[in-house]
Each structure stands twice: as structure tokens, then as C-alpha cells.
Image (tube, rainbow over all chains, first blue to last red; front, side, top):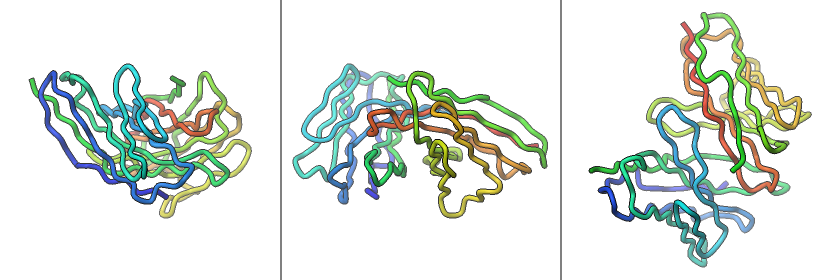
Length: 112
Length: 115
């Protein structure tokens, strides 16, 4: 099981770009990297997923280096509503089964 | 994205009674679903993995006789907290493994308060 390590918390200001890095040194060949956002009293919400290199969607970008031992979630021009906990999750749905073990997550606080 | 729904979102029950929480994948079939527990300001803790048509796999330390999980169809898994006690009060979240097999989507969560 790939263990993930993220910064416990980050502060930012509205309009800034925020980059949150996750370390997953023992990621397996078949593992994908997925990021989620969680607000209080809600289930985590899917943000973005990638396997290698760079992935971009309408809300974020995900950068994955060649060795895949880390990944960086990039949130462009954050707003107050982006204040939340962000989790990276590493796993696959292969024959071995998908095991979801959450790390501590990163608490992002966006200030006005 | 895929939609996973939980019901009820909040439930209060008396100590000693049982309560059931449902998790449904609304627009895809999920052979595998997961149940978590989350305490305030803490991360999600995996309780069990639910596979359609077979027994759930529980994580170490989770009492399978207390937290009954049933995954009778490809779109529904249920968690029943039996003989609930105040210490079982928590936020319970489910997720479902999407058809592609690489992504899980989460329900909205259910607050259980045992009085």
C-alpha cells in the first residue's frame, strides 16, 4: 500500500496559485494518483486524477514527475470557497483490489 | 462525474438500537464499495471493503458483528450499526469504485448521533 505524505496545512490569499505536493515513495506500477477536496460534514469530492506527466481540467492541474514518487496539485487563482482539506490518494483497481488508505490531508486556508 | 448518494444524511438513535445507512451508486454499477468513519478534524478511516455478492472485508480493529455490511446489488451497499452506543456517534462516509476500476467516488456522508 502506498503511503502518502502531505503538508498538514497551507495558507494562501485570494487570487493566488496554490501548489500542494504529496509524497508517495512506494507507489506501485499500476497505481493512479487521485486528489480530492473535502468540506466540513461532506464527503470528499473528486478533483483530478493522473498516472504520469501532467493532467489539467477545468479546476486544477496535476503534475507527476517521471519517477512518480510525488505529485503536485495546482489550484489556479484560489478563492475563499477553496478553503478545504485536500487529500491525495494512491491506488488501483487491479486484480489485487483497490485499497483506500487516507493520509492526513492538507488543510488549505484562503484569506481575503 | 459519477454520483454516489448516502441516506440518511443525519440520524439520531437511542442507545441500544440499530441504525442502517444506505450507499447507492446512481449512474454506474459498483462491484466494490468502501465504508469509512471520520472524527472531527481527522482523516477518513477505512472500516471495511464491501464486494457485491460476497462478505465484506473488515479492517483490523473494526467489529464486524457491530458494523454489518451488506452489498446485495451492484448499486447498493448498506452499513448497519447494531446495538449502537454513544461512542459510535460519528460521521460515516461511503465510496464506490467506478466502473473503470481506477477511481472512487464518495457519498455525501451520514452523521450518526447516538443518545
